[in-house]
Length: 489
Image 1 (cartoon, rainbow, N blue to C red):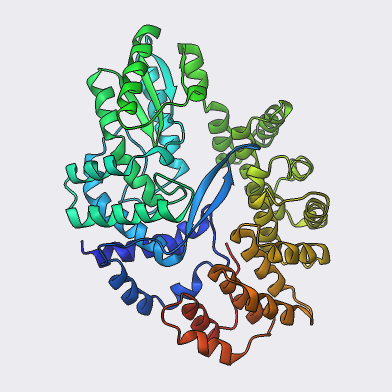
Image 2 (cartoon, rainbow, N blue to C red):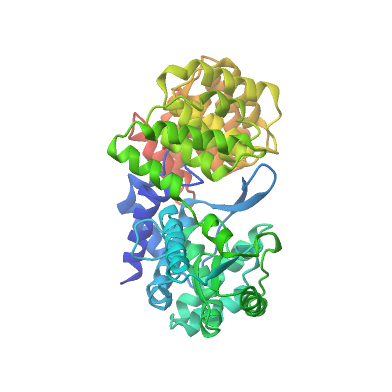
């Protein structure tokens, strides 16, 4: 495949798959998607640059749980497409080297990262465990995996895999530029491209474990190993630890353990969830009671058992079941890391709009969300999806938009919310904000907001359209030719 074909594949993933993931765009990248034929020509020149590097990087703190976060790297669309294109081109060689017991990240899949692949790994693990009554399991993963990947070692790995030197040089240039542009290091988190590159980085680890005679399965850095006794598994973990250290990686002490057979089976047991899904597929009335019981058990502990909570909320949403509404809204702030799932569940139930709006208003009124950007963005995103017109939410959106100490991400959604719910005075205030703003990402959001509230001059857009060195030219040209702008998915 030529580089142009990998670019087309990267664009399809971005416009139709990646747009729904952790970092949605306020208009689903529609300004570029609608002009792709022109934008592609520009991108082809850009990805041919041997010294390609990101123009800017924003680090978005994405919560893993109520306390800790992982730093997602947010690029502009040009750099995002560049990175995805380079990684997809590399994966053409990498994929053939990845063994079948590794379930993460493949070029041939339309969605590179999928919970279905993680579940497939667990099914394979259970099948292995049940195939031999003497087996037990150890589990481990890597502490700050992406952040600790050594770029110089990765370069050698890519060359060893048969990837052409010019492409390796481009990947190195981009990753070095990423590290110079931000306080992050290693591989950018939040991008499927990084998953492709991480796969090859762990190939020596996979081979070491295979040579030791121990069976294992892996999804990204989440690894299960199988042996007949505690000593053999401990020896395998010690050897695996040595193999990881040679890669500048360290196993996570909190997530490394050896489980006896009973605990291994219990750890991999998805029986209740599988039974509920099966009963729902048959339309059996027992499904609702089993699901309610699973949810009650999951929320009876402190903290709640999140895997079952997420499963329950998804099933409740699909079946328009309001069982969890009160609990979900009461825990929105405390469980901010799953706030997107909570809000999408409640908003799917038309009879609970009043409770939903009251909760959104109470959270922004009663708490400072400066250090909760994910929750702040999700509240605005939900209000946009459900067309919630609220003075409380709009006043808070102005507060967010004007605060340059906040990350750009919630500020962009704040601008979009104001534009969609504007009054007479909002247009001039948005224009004033635009004129004093330095961030191109926020200026783009403000252009969209001014367009939606009908307070933008054609001369401003025409002038921006002519600035070929700015990404805003594409947004301006799009706004000159569109009336209805899609909501973020």
